[in-house]
Length: 371
Image 1 (cartoon, rainbow, N blue to C red):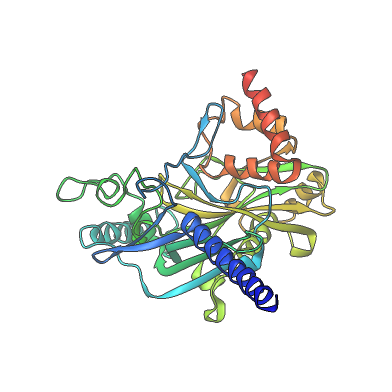
Image 2 (image 1 turned 135 degrees about the vertical axis):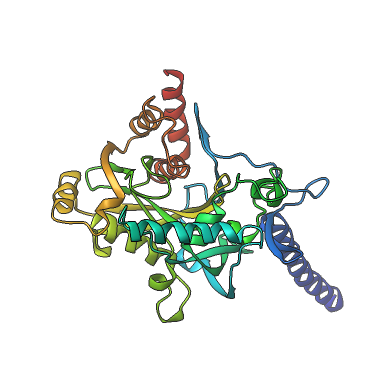
């Protein structure tokens, strides 16, 4: 009797151990973003267990007639991603363009110098930035919370501008898009083509108004398009002070202060998702911010007294933060084809976070049917 009881206890313990190990293994297979090397080019691909073992067929975000190039890689708006679940590492070494693309960077630098010397316009500052080398997503064993590991390398703005010329012909007649990107595997790309990571924030006032901005015609990238409430890129000289890795929530708070003159005690801030604009190879984090006391009129009045980065926006709209109103605003004919790729998915996830997925999808479908 005692021997049978002892064997039963041992068997139960071993069963729990093996079940836990198997659960973790299957989660890692399903949710891992792993790096691989091809010569000197590092890239990443998002894979899961399925027949054939190939990459998953991805679809970029769309709503009715509005189709974007944004891929939601992690997060569905339902639950926020905890700050402690995001791990950012800055790797040694600086990103370099391939030899055949390096002259493009030189052209940009020379043109900016010429324009400045001729007094045609203010020069573009070649600010220090980050390139994305890899993103790893996994799940914790017990509660399946996401764990996101973001690995970055140093780069600069001129390298980013050169790498944005994805459809420019190389000496052999190919393009960077054709040579380095696989349309069947959109999460695979060399780091030199991914010299951008930003925080995009959907800001809702205390009286339930969504802040929507339109970018200035004077900005170099994405001029004149409708965009998120706040858009802030990682900057090495600011966000890595003291040689620390950047904190994405701190980057978002910096954007709130610089673009809307808001201080951290005036709002709550939640990370909803990680997304990739596959057309332009730009990564971002989606945040939702709710103002505690400041209304739409109060925010207008605040901004009338001065904003650090006022020149980035030419117009701001305040849209009732109800699904039908936001959806109609997104799909209005005069704006339909003039959105920054990441903004529609950001606003959708913010609605889901506040109102629930079933309610949001039902209201969106009703608006689309009436178009």
